[in-house]
Length: 370
Ligand code: SF4
Image (tube, rainbow, N blue to C red; front, side):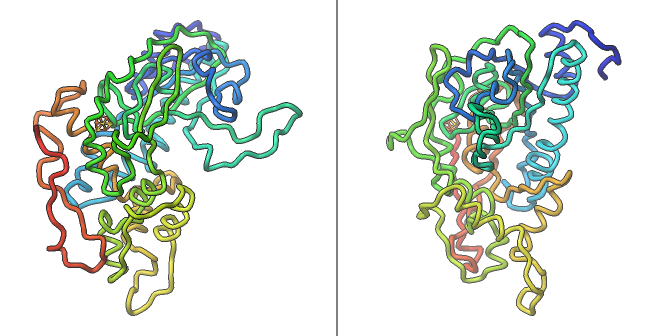
């Protein structure tokens, strides 16, 4: 635990060691100059105008969190341990908060930053003349790149040397001057293998041949990744895709919905998925559960924890599971597993038509061994 002393001098090394002792796996530092190209409402100095450094931390998502979804047998673990249940809402914030306390004990202000998203809070008018519009949020993955702990994968997922895409991020903005860590050379971790594209049943990740990219420049380096269709991604991940939700099949027999043909915004996709998964309905003979989709409701109920309400149904089939399965097989992650690769069997994928027989769901091999 943090020593109960005030005004204790701390070094960068002290902060890194302390943060890791709190369970945070990766810690990197960006100086504020690396955010020179950040858009308005996404700059750390719009939260702390005196900011000199941004400490970005990552904690691993353990591989076993996904096992139940990969096997098609158990869903709540991933939401509970690896997503909004405990990882985002407890495991990471405790370490971030304790580390921020350490920095403030040394006499510097430390803003513990929870990674929200700007699109979740539209801008409100500035509260002072000339000020930035309210509701500022960092692009936490780009902050992670600026702090040298990883790079953007083609799938827009953040990749690290140790765990590949199996991490979640948070940050501390401080007026303490800290030595920045070296940036990772673009293309070091992601080799554009397109395994994530093949594994994404929602067809949300473009292929490189489609030439749909987004890029940012930090110092002399340009980081580029695929311009992911966030509408399809959200439909797939949050329970709008019958191909990856047996709960939709059970609740809505005969319903047919092909996510790969949708052209909707991320916000519109949330409007479809959220009420469908959170909603209740009168108990009827046809469905006595009292929920719109009982299985999704249970994932939220069991997995939310700590008041968190976000949930995962699809479990990042391509962008995370396919990606780390391959990176681990290639020896391109620091962490290795004695039991071999993650994807051990042909993968399940349901037909888009709810109510179709389970036999119509073929085992697919969209992440083959090489
Ligand atoms: S699977 Fe991972 S390494 Fe391969 S292109 Fe996608 S993000 Fe890059």
